[in-house]
Image 1: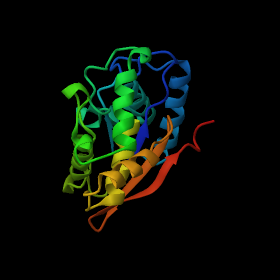
Image 2: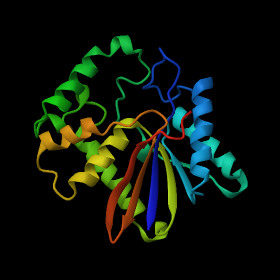
Image 3: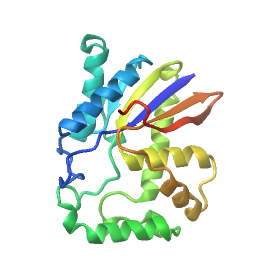
Length: 214
């Protein structure tokens, strides 16, 4: 059985541009990263992956040192990045009204066309995000990962869409069903969602676990 622990990175200090790849964890975020690491250390993951975002990497390296840096490395891969929004990255929330309006339309009023649309024709559509999380599941379905446990530090929309993809597999022909499930599947900061694969099928065995956060 292969096990994936999808971890939503800890929350960053308020009023920071959270889309920015270089946004750092604050003191509280670092404390939460240690809580996550101590929880995951009980399961002794074989591998650690992270998105390219600094806040996810920082938490991932906390786990690495908790487990013993000499025995683990952190693989940083854009496959685990948040949904691509290049025209938004680095801007303060006060200037993102048009992006959030676009996102609301896609999530709450989905059509076959708008789930394939991109904000201002840049970044990544929600359909492309769905295809990307399927690649994540395909990656960890390979033989080299069989019987292993993997910690993946990533972001809310990646986790939400991964859970959605598992719940809908193999039928993705209803845009409304896709986005309704997606909207219900958002995890909390610092939470752990556990996926397991046996007999060629992925299942969500635990969602949005925050019992380790005190």
